[in-house]
Image (cartoon, rainbow, N blue to C red; front, side, top):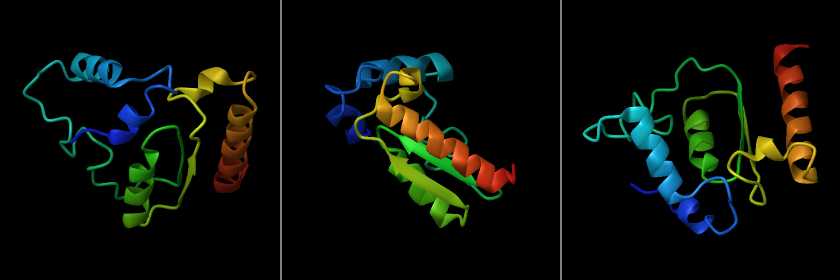
Length: 115
């Protein structure tokens, strides 16, 4: 199943397009017969039992992973960043929304790691 968010966001997200996603997937899996939706490959379909607290900041369809974390009772937070790029960490120090997301990540980690 294709992720419509990647397709819908292609004009805004300069880091990820359907073609780039397919290129990465084929490089990682290297076997066209492998089903990328297999629970051993896809976090969205995997058994998430036992994961530690998790925070997800996303510019595409991270919401699906957030719902799965909640389904498995994993302490988690999900933060959409629709104005961000797929690899939005590359805009650190260049885009206020990225800097704010990084600050939120740090606060969340300190809270859950007890630091």
